[in-house]
Length: 271
Image 1: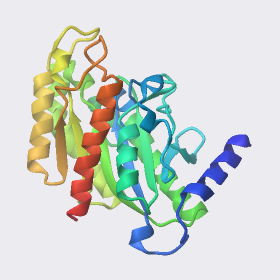
Image 2: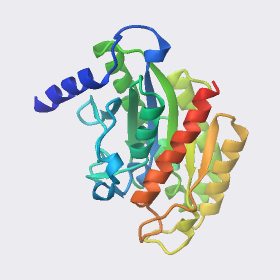
Image 3: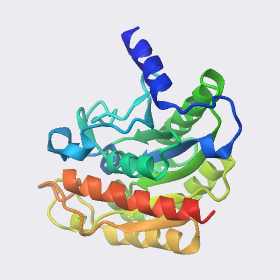
């Protein structure tokens, strides 16, 4: 009951006035975030710079478990990564400043170790969960809060696990196209902007896992971005990682979020 009351009070505070008005300048800007552990995020809350300690008043995040909108917090909503965050932290801060009169709404679905090959294709577990979260979140906006919204973009950080076998790596380009196409079809956004973090070359260093086919997945990601004018890629090779050479650290997650925000802003403004 406390959680629901807090969420209700929070939404009254952070959603701009003009409920129910169909004016695009007041629409909620919704972003889908999806991927595996580097979307979950290993950024440590205690290491956040001071400017990130106060959550932007116009940012809301869909709580996948409680099925309510809450404010931006220092945790990923992943049961295995309490008080850790991903690219959404810096992304949200940048977008909130770019659109101070809009509500920025983040719907994030991620799972460490999940593969595009097994989990993210249409009708697979993570894909279904992602779509359920998105439609549940936006239905809540429209039905309960009477807030019109625009799906403004998607962030994708995934692919590490698909580099484990040659079969998965070779299928990555085709599978990624299938998934992006299906998301655009289901959301009725044929030109949905998608910002993708290319998996890092640090995976080819010593890690607790085996990512032998990293270069094939990287090439697949680059090929998809090259052929689709609304897919943009970020080279993550210079982003620092934890000792496992796999997971981006706090500083890297903030850099990744900023880069994703800048690219999505360019795409939105060119529409």
